[in-house]
Each structure stands twice: as C-alpha cells, then as structure tokens.
Figure 1 (cartoon, rainbow, N blue to C red):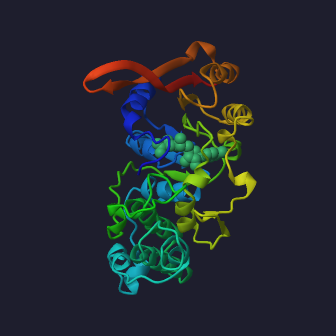
Figure 2: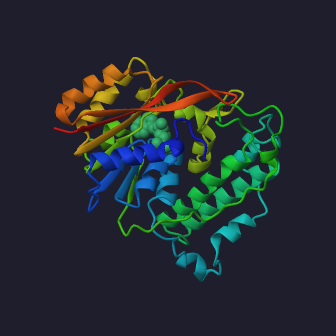
Length: 339
Ligand SMILES: C[S@@+](CC[C@H](N)C(=O)[O-])C[C@H]1O[C@@H](n2cnc3c(N)ncnc32)[C@H](O)[C@@H]1O
C-alpha cells in the first residue's frame, strides 16, 4: 500500500544498518516496530526476529495484526461448521448492501466520489457480515482481525483518490472501476508469538520491553488521522460523526499525533526515547522533518551511550533526463545503544 513515509523502498538500507549494528546476532531477539504504519518493516524483519508492532491508528493495527503477526491462515472452524469453507470466496461473492460507506462515500446518496456505488455496497456488505460472524461467535477475534485486514488491504486498490483520503478525485480514475477483491496474504512462519498493539507510543513505551526498537514516527504536519480517515472508518465501522466536503470523521483532539505538531514534537520524541526499554535503538527520520538532525542527536546523547552512536544519511539521486543533477540526503538513520 502507498503510505505517507512508507519505507518499502528503504528496506535494504535499514536491513544492512540494523544487521551491522547488532553484529548479525539474531537468535532469540525481539524487534519492536513502534510506529508500524503498513507494517512493512516488521514484515521484513519477521524472518529474523519475533516481531511486535504498534500504531495509534486502528486501521494500521488491523493491517499488522491480520497480515504481519500470524504465522498461518486461521482455521475458521466455526465458519466451516455452518458450511462456509473459504470465507474470502464467500465475502468476494456478496451482492452488496447499502450502509454507512455507500450513504456517505459514494454518489448513491452523497456527492462524494471515493467509491463507485457497487464497491461501496460491497464494502458495507463485507463489513456488516464480519460483525455478524463475530457477534454469532462463528469467528474468533483473531479471525475477525485477519479478515478485516484483507478488506483494509484491498480498499486502496478501488479508491478514487490520489494516494491519501484527504480528498477524492473530481473525475473517476480507472482503478475505481476495479471490483474489490479480498486476498490472503503471503505469510512467513517464524515460529514465534508475534504481537500487535494499538496504542500511542508515549503510552506503550511505559511497559513494553524488546531487544531492538525501530522508531519511524511522522515527520511533518500531515496527520495520519486525516489522511487515512476513511480506512479508519471502514476498520472501526462505528458510524462516526463526519464533516465537510471530504466527510472526514470528527476526531477527538487527543487522537491527533504530537509528532505532527511543531510545538510538541521535541518533547514527544524525548518522552518516547527515554521510556522505551530496549538495548538497540534505531530511528528513521526525514531530512525535511520538523526536528533537525542536531535536535535528534541531542536527545540520543541524553538517553544512550555516546560511543555507540552511528548515523547514516540515505541519498537519492535527482535525475534530469539521464544526467544526475546532484545527490541529496533525504532520509536519516540513527542508532544508539540505550544506557
Ligand atoms: C512514518 S509512518 C510509519 C511508516 C511505516 N514505517 C511504514 O513503512 O509503513 C508513522 C506512523 O506513526 C503513526 N503514529 C503517529 N503518532 C503516533 C503515536 N503517538 N503513537 C503511535 N503511532 C503513531 C501513524 O499512524 C503512522 O502510521
């Protein structure tokens, strides 16, 4: 999934940095991805470590809980008993029904062009069916979260947006006409009890312990709550109060992230880095972020062993035709061993 600040293109850089700093000692280690987003970093490191993911967005928690932490596809014994052998086939073949998403995010009854009516009705039908199955105990909570993850993963492929849900396109993009299709993820079995959390990092770091912690917080003023509001509403399916042209869910002030606020980010960063209980601390941050490299170093030298500190700047080259104009460092990677 395309995601603001997503690290899919930097996995090799992060991997080589992490492996170098931990001396390739992977046995019995836990890896905490504290701001997991799509979970792509945790998913990458699952082949080496027990992974723990966390994100304050419920949609992101669902993605990682359903797609990253399981080692195998759930058994769906309760559904099998009522004759449903392959739940994704069942869900993919639902007719569609009018519900909150159709009413508010398709042109059936609103002006909003996020989904075709057909896909919106399918999303509603799938969402209502999942709640029904859970209420009737046909599925366990783990199975519910797994199936919901397949829906959250599928929605962006039929959304009429330019990447984020802050606005919908005013013309229909051809992707919107695809039929929404749920698919099983390719799961890697690391034989570990992987875990997912849905907490603010400021809160979770009071209690969680890991060997390696990877920190990839938001780096600018764009709140993930606003930019992914519709994924959040589909995940929660809680009929929220919505507002404005885009139908954004009305968030409580505390649901927004202090990492996206210039006046709060330094203290939030310091609080999380001070609290987190781990030996190896890795941080990704953008060179265009709200905090400067100096400010991050200042915090790291307070909470870590200075002699272990290492920094890498990841460059990308700016091309004009085939001529390289100049390389520019656009991503920072920091390491320190905690005191
Ligand atoms: C830069 S993105 C992470 C991207 C992720 N590494 C990936 O590659 O997909 C930052 C994430 O932090 C989450 N977030 C923002 N504030 C948070 C907080 N206080 N605690 C936990 N997660 C938070 C956002 O919801 C977002 O998913």
